[in-house]
Length: 213
Image (cartoon, rainbow, N blue to C red; front, side, top):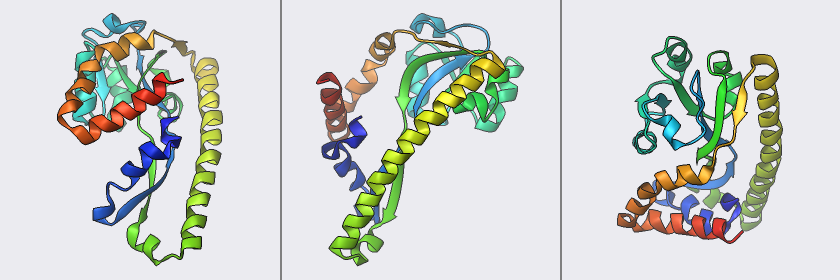
């Protein structure tokens, strides 16, 4: 995973140094995919015209538009009732939305297009790090790395449990569309990053690592 590559993550973790905050490590928060109440999403065309809840994020809104859907930004608390009442055709999130938020009661189709990943970043005050000795800083960094490895294993198990619960208890069906088709549809979003060199450099590094596998 590219988040384990310090050549990529170190500049990101240090980008907020001027504000007195440093990134210490990351925790996996999975991939976001689409889930719907009626229509199954097997390809990009299936998204056309569907009203999909997204986070209140310009990037998420633009992404769904490029995939042909109709994005509706709203708080997570309103998603269940909106799908139930037909205000929404579906939403996008990781598997825990099906179980913890119980969206599996109103949305029975989950399609793994894995359109985005938003890892959680563990932060630490730069002033705190500066007060530590070199040995103490190394100990903190090693502990952070170990915690990430522990969290990734715990996350994987929890995701598998959530998926099994969704299938057995709620009757959700999981689908596996061609991810490349979705990637191609939103490629212009990445091309636009050329006007922001710092972000485009990170994107290129991630793509190079992915393509080298």
